[in-house]
Length: 227
Image 1 (cartoon, rainbow, N blue to C red):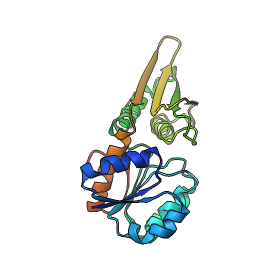
Image 2: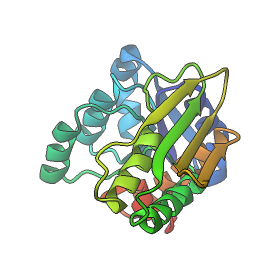
Image 3: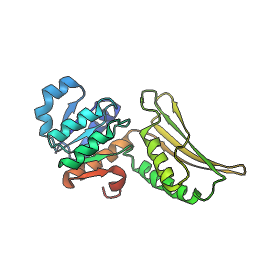
Image 4: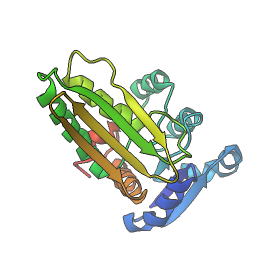
Protein backbone atom coordinates (compact mmCIF):
# COMPACT_ATOMS: atom_id res chain seq x y z
CA UNK A 1 0.00 0.00 0.00
CA UNK A 2 1.01 3.61 -0.54
CA UNK A 3 0.71 6.16 2.28
CA UNK A 4 0.46 9.94 2.14
CA UNK A 5 1.97 11.80 5.10
CA UNK A 6 0.70 15.38 5.38
CA UNK A 7 2.69 17.37 7.88
CA UNK A 8 6.25 16.28 8.49
CA UNK A 9 6.92 17.30 12.06
CA UNK A 10 7.85 14.84 14.78
CA UNK A 11 4.60 12.91 14.35
CA UNK A 12 5.09 12.65 10.59
CA UNK A 13 8.59 11.29 11.05
CA UNK A 14 7.40 8.77 13.65
CA UNK A 15 4.60 7.63 11.32
CA UNK A 16 7.04 7.13 8.45
CA UNK A 17 9.31 4.98 10.63
CA UNK A 18 6.48 2.72 11.80
CA UNK A 19 4.42 2.56 8.58
CA UNK A 20 6.18 -0.50 7.06
CA UNK A 21 4.88 -2.57 9.99
CA UNK A 22 1.37 -1.94 8.65
CA UNK A 23 1.99 -2.87 5.03
CA UNK A 24 2.92 0.55 3.62
CA UNK A 25 5.83 0.15 1.22
CA UNK A 26 5.98 3.66 -0.24
CA UNK A 27 5.28 7.18 0.94
CA UNK A 28 4.47 10.65 -0.32
CA UNK A 29 5.34 13.43 2.13
CA UNK A 30 3.56 16.80 1.85
CA UNK A 31 4.72 19.47 4.26
CA UNK A 32 4.17 22.83 2.54
CA UNK A 33 2.56 24.56 -0.44
CA UNK A 34 5.44 23.69 -2.76
CA UNK A 35 4.94 20.01 -1.92
CA UNK A 36 1.23 20.27 -2.71
CA UNK A 37 2.02 21.75 -6.11
CA UNK A 38 4.77 19.30 -7.02
CA UNK A 39 3.49 16.08 -5.46
CA UNK A 40 -0.29 16.18 -5.87
CA UNK A 41 -0.32 13.59 -8.67
CA UNK A 42 1.71 11.20 -6.53
CA UNK A 43 -0.50 11.89 -3.49
CA UNK A 44 -3.64 11.05 -5.49
CA UNK A 45 -2.19 7.57 -6.06
CA UNK A 46 -2.04 6.84 -2.31
CA UNK A 47 -4.42 4.40 -0.68
CA UNK A 48 -4.86 6.69 2.34
CA UNK A 49 -3.26 9.76 3.93
CA UNK A 50 -2.41 10.67 7.51
CA UNK A 51 -2.77 14.38 8.29
CA UNK A 52 -0.93 15.76 11.34
CA UNK A 53 -0.23 19.38 10.51
CA UNK A 54 -1.12 22.71 12.17
CA UNK A 55 -4.46 24.31 13.15
CA UNK A 56 -4.05 27.00 10.50
CA UNK A 57 -3.53 24.49 7.65
CA UNK A 58 -5.69 21.50 8.60
CA UNK A 59 -8.89 22.69 6.89
CA UNK A 60 -7.18 23.38 3.56
CA UNK A 61 -5.33 20.05 3.77
CA UNK A 62 -8.50 18.08 4.40
CA UNK A 63 -10.45 19.86 1.67
CA UNK A 64 -7.75 18.95 -0.83
CA UNK A 65 -7.88 15.30 0.23
CA UNK A 66 -11.66 15.29 -0.06
CA UNK A 67 -11.49 16.94 -3.49
CA UNK A 68 -9.34 14.09 -4.77
CA UNK A 69 -11.39 11.38 -2.99
CA UNK A 70 -8.36 10.43 -0.90
CA UNK A 71 -9.23 8.68 2.37
CA UNK A 72 -7.64 10.61 5.21
CA UNK A 73 -7.03 10.19 8.93
CA UNK A 74 -6.48 13.49 10.78
CA UNK A 75 -5.17 14.05 14.28
CA UNK A 76 -4.51 17.79 14.00
CA UNK A 77 -6.10 19.59 16.95
CA UNK A 78 -7.17 23.21 17.19
CA UNK A 79 -9.52 22.81 14.22
CA UNK A 80 -11.51 26.05 13.82
CA UNK A 81 -13.84 25.71 10.82
CA UNK A 82 -15.68 22.56 11.88
CA UNK A 83 -18.99 23.65 10.34
CA UNK A 84 -17.38 24.00 6.92
CA UNK A 85 -16.10 20.45 7.12
CA UNK A 86 -19.35 19.06 8.53
CA UNK A 87 -21.27 20.46 5.57
CA UNK A 88 -18.76 18.91 3.19
CA UNK A 89 -18.99 15.50 4.87
CA UNK A 90 -22.77 15.56 4.54
CA UNK A 91 -22.75 16.39 0.83
CA UNK A 92 -19.80 14.38 -0.47
CA UNK A 93 -18.78 10.71 -0.36
CA UNK A 94 -15.60 11.23 1.69
CA UNK A 95 -13.72 8.71 3.82
CA UNK A 96 -12.38 10.26 6.97
CA UNK A 97 -11.39 9.41 10.54
CA UNK A 98 -10.79 12.29 12.92
CA UNK A 99 -9.71 12.34 16.54
CA UNK A 100 -8.10 14.49 19.20
CA UNK A 101 -5.89 11.60 20.32
CA UNK A 102 -5.04 8.35 18.51
CA UNK A 103 -3.45 6.61 21.47
CA UNK A 104 -5.42 3.48 22.38
CA UNK A 105 -4.67 4.14 26.05
CA UNK A 106 -5.98 7.69 25.80
CA UNK A 107 -9.22 6.50 24.23
CA UNK A 108 -9.68 3.98 27.04
CA UNK A 109 -9.05 6.94 29.37
CA UNK A 110 -11.87 8.87 27.63
CA UNK A 111 -14.27 6.02 28.44
CA UNK A 112 -13.00 5.79 32.03
CA UNK A 113 -13.42 9.55 32.40
CA UNK A 114 -17.07 9.42 31.27
CA UNK A 115 -17.78 6.51 33.59
CA UNK A 116 -16.32 8.36 36.57
CA UNK A 117 -18.19 11.54 35.65
CA UNK A 118 -21.45 9.58 35.60
CA UNK A 119 -20.72 8.31 39.11
CA UNK A 120 -19.89 11.84 40.28
CA UNK A 121 -22.95 13.48 38.70
CA UNK A 122 -24.93 13.19 41.94
CA UNK A 123 -22.03 14.23 44.18
CA UNK A 124 -22.11 18.00 43.92
CA UNK A 125 -19.80 18.42 46.91
CA UNK A 126 -16.94 17.64 44.51
CA UNK A 127 -15.48 20.33 42.27
CA UNK A 128 -13.92 19.03 39.07
CA UNK A 129 -10.88 20.54 37.36
CA UNK A 130 -8.22 19.41 34.89
CA UNK A 131 -4.55 19.89 34.14
CA UNK A 132 -2.73 19.11 30.90
CA UNK A 133 0.98 19.28 30.12
CA UNK A 134 2.65 19.14 26.69
CA UNK A 135 5.90 20.09 25.01
CA UNK A 136 6.72 23.74 24.37
CA UNK A 137 6.09 23.40 20.61
CA UNK A 138 2.36 22.67 21.00
CA UNK A 139 0.34 25.69 19.88
CA UNK A 140 -3.25 24.92 20.87
CA UNK A 141 -4.16 25.62 24.50
CA UNK A 142 -5.85 23.73 26.02
CA UNK A 143 -5.04 20.57 24.10
CA UNK A 144 -7.60 18.87 21.89
CA UNK A 145 -7.40 15.85 24.19
CA UNK A 146 -8.25 18.03 27.20
CA UNK A 147 -11.27 19.44 25.37
CA UNK A 148 -12.45 15.91 24.52
CA UNK A 149 -12.12 14.95 28.20
CA UNK A 150 -14.05 18.07 29.17
CA UNK A 151 -16.85 17.22 26.72
CA UNK A 152 -17.06 13.72 28.19
CA UNK A 153 -17.49 15.09 31.71
CA UNK A 154 -20.09 17.67 30.68
CA UNK A 155 -22.08 14.98 28.86
CA UNK A 156 -22.54 13.19 32.19
CA UNK A 157 -22.86 16.12 34.63
CA UNK A 158 -25.75 18.27 33.49
CA UNK A 159 -25.14 21.30 35.71
CA UNK A 160 -21.66 21.86 34.25
CA UNK A 161 -21.08 23.98 31.15
CA UNK A 162 -17.33 24.48 31.43
CA UNK A 163 -14.50 22.98 33.47
CA UNK A 164 -11.37 24.80 34.65
CA UNK A 165 -8.36 23.57 32.67
CA UNK A 166 -4.79 24.47 33.64
CA UNK A 167 -2.35 24.13 30.74
CA UNK A 168 1.42 23.72 31.03
CA UNK A 169 4.02 23.76 28.26
CA UNK A 170 7.26 22.18 29.46
CA UNK A 171 10.37 20.92 27.66
CA UNK A 172 9.56 17.91 25.43
CA UNK A 173 6.69 16.41 27.45
CA UNK A 174 4.66 14.18 25.11
CA UNK A 175 1.34 14.51 26.94
CA UNK A 176 -0.11 14.33 30.46
CA UNK A 177 -3.81 14.74 31.31
CA UNK A 178 -5.12 14.80 34.89
CA UNK A 179 -8.75 14.97 36.01
CA UNK A 180 -9.42 15.78 39.67
CA UNK A 181 -12.55 15.83 41.81
CA UNK A 182 -11.94 17.72 45.05
CA UNK A 183 -14.10 18.08 48.15
CA UNK A 184 -13.47 19.25 51.69
CA UNK A 185 -13.07 15.65 52.84
CA UNK A 186 -11.06 14.04 50.00
CA UNK A 187 -10.23 14.05 46.32
CA UNK A 188 -10.25 11.61 43.41
CA UNK A 189 -7.84 11.75 40.46
CA UNK A 190 -7.42 9.87 37.19
CA UNK A 191 -4.42 10.42 34.95
CA UNK A 192 -3.10 9.49 31.52
CA UNK A 193 0.59 9.87 30.65
CA UNK A 194 1.96 9.35 27.13
CA UNK A 195 5.59 8.21 27.19
CA UNK A 196 6.31 8.43 23.44
CA UNK A 197 4.68 9.62 20.22
CA UNK A 198 4.67 6.05 18.98
CA UNK A 199 1.43 5.45 20.88
CA UNK A 200 -0.31 8.04 18.69
CA UNK A 201 1.40 6.85 15.50
CA UNK A 202 0.42 3.20 16.01
CA UNK A 203 -3.21 4.18 16.57
CA UNK A 204 -3.29 6.43 13.51
CA UNK A 205 -1.72 3.77 11.28
CA UNK A 206 -4.17 1.14 12.50
CA UNK A 207 -6.98 3.60 11.74
CA UNK A 208 -5.59 4.21 8.24
CA UNK A 209 -5.50 0.50 7.40
CA UNK A 210 -9.03 0.10 8.76
CA UNK A 211 -10.38 3.10 6.79
CA UNK A 212 -9.14 1.68 3.48
CA UNK A 213 -11.41 -1.33 4.04
CA UNK A 214 -14.29 0.56 5.70
CA UNK A 215 -15.13 3.80 3.82
CA UNK A 216 -17.12 6.41 5.71
CA UNK A 217 -16.79 9.21 8.26
CA UNK A 218 -15.88 8.24 11.81
CA UNK A 219 -14.62 9.67 15.06
CA UNK A 220 -11.65 7.62 16.26
CA UNK A 221 -13.26 7.06 19.65
CA UNK A 222 -16.13 5.30 17.81
CA UNK A 223 -13.91 2.79 16.03
CA UNK A 224 -10.71 2.30 18.05
CA UNK A 225 -12.11 -0.90 19.53
CA UNK A 226 -12.60 -2.35 16.04
CA UNK A 227 -9.15 -1.81 14.63
